[in-house]
Structure formats: C-alpha cells, structure tokens
Image (cartoon, rainbow, N blue to C red):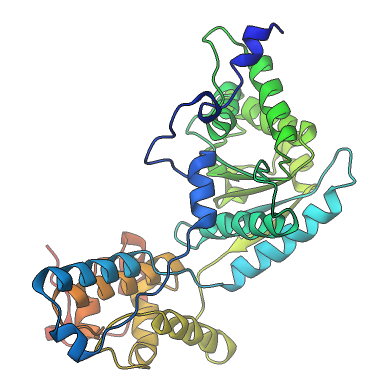
Length: 362
C-alpha cells in the first residue's frame, strides 16, 4: 500500500474536516455525544419565582422543560440489566480468545426496547473503559453500526467505514476496506461491536448469506465481542442451515418481550416502572403517585411496550407544559397518539370505557 493510499484512511476529523452537526449514533462523533449526554432535570421554580419571570423568561423556562421531558432519562429495565450483565461478562471471557468468541443477540418485537438495550450496553461499557483509562481520549472501545436493507458485504463494510470516518477513493475494493477497518479498530482498542437491525440480513438470499459471512469475518478479525439486535431473528431463519447452526452455537439470545400485567411480581414490576418514570417528571402541579395510579390504564394503552409507554408519558408531559395544566391526567394521556401495535393491543385487552371517554378516531 502506498503512502498516498494510507493517507486516505485518516479519519475526516483528523484531516481538519468538521463532523456534520447531525451526526447519528452510527458515527464516532454521534456515538461520543450519546455517551457523554446526561439529561439533567431542570430546577422547578416556585410560584413566586415563576410569577416574577418576564414573558420571554417564562417561554425559555417552558422550552427547557419541554426539551427535558422529550428526552426523559431511560429506565433500567430487566432486559437492559440482563443484556448489560451478560455482555460485560462475555467481553471479559473473550479477551483471551483467539477465535470463536461468544456474543449476544437481542431479539423481540418492535417497540420492546432492543435498540435501547443495545445502545445502553455500549454506553455502560464505554463509560467503564473511560474510568479505567481516564487520560486516554484516543480510545474508542465501542462501535455501533446498523445493517442496511438488502445489505451486501460491501455495504456492510462501509457502515464500519462511516462510523470511523474513514475516506476511500472510488476504486478501493472490499479487501482494502476490511483491512482498513480492522487496522483502525485495533488502533483505537475496540472491544465491543454493536450491530443493530440484524433482521435486515436474509440468509435465504445469496447477498444476505454473503453479508452474514462478512459479519462473521469481522468477528474473526476483530478481538471484540459482538452484540446484535433485531426483530424476531429466530423467525428470520438466522439459525437455519450451516451458517445458522454456527451462529446458534456462539451466541446467547436474550428475548426482548413486552411487560406482563399478571398479578403479583409482574404487576408490581410494571407499577415500579411507571413510578420511576413519574419520579423524573418536572411539572409544577403534578400530584406524586397519580400516574402510578394509572398503571393499568397505561399498560393497556401501551400494550406493555416500553417504547409506547415512554412515548405516552413524554408526550403527556410536553402537552401539560404547553397547555399550562402542569400535570398528567388520564384525559391528557388520551390525547397522546401511540403506535398502531399499541392501539391494536389496547383494542384487544383494555376494558370497555364509557362512550364519553373513547378517543375520536378519524
């Protein structure tokens, strides 16, 4: 490889180019911003302090609180706890392995918190690494990529390129790309690779099988633990055939499932989850415990999906600030839209409400 070729592998930021302002998690700049971001709860002003605010100051205070509630801190759900504990153990066990490293697959329906669990795993791991190496800012222990729809091996490899910010002339082939990715990953001490949208790999097609082989090749080349997340990957044929049996023999599957509302432990866990979210609210007139009292209603509205529950509470909090009520009620929650899956679940499981309380359907 010539000197000019090697220069092409230097990350864009190192060559003086500014990262795009909207860098997603699938870039090192976006990932670093995600790891370092903390949603700090805004200080609630007293009634006298709010009365003393100018109109512009009140608008600013409301905007600050709306932004906080739109980005409400995540709850450490049982799925997240299991994913983090299992994966961190595998990272330890894999450090001395030359090949056949073990990994994790998070599988479940949409809205069950798979991507959240995957990203929180990466965040927890990177924070732990930073604590061990507080002065080494060159370390990038976690890589986060997504599998593109109808992915080819080259498309998949370019996702790693995009994360690192590497630059390639148009004539570079897949071998050059893979070698550059592996060299960069080794240089920045990557030891955890997160791969989302795994269901986009279709092993029944030639390109899907080849893309799967490309992932496996990365796993062999990189001294890292791989964690995947995808929608119902078992049903996608991921464990079928020779390739599938090899994946099944190396990966622990952690199911991401909706919460249950069965009496006892499950119901208490759901109420605790709602209570934790309620404790994070920054509303002036919200009565503590009133949201927890709506736990059954929230369960039916969300179908037990953490994503839908989060949308309901965050949306209601934003609306409570906008309409000046400063509290979350069932009537306000009724105005917050949820996804189709949650709507369908509610229609099947929720008790019949009086006609006056039904949401108007267009």
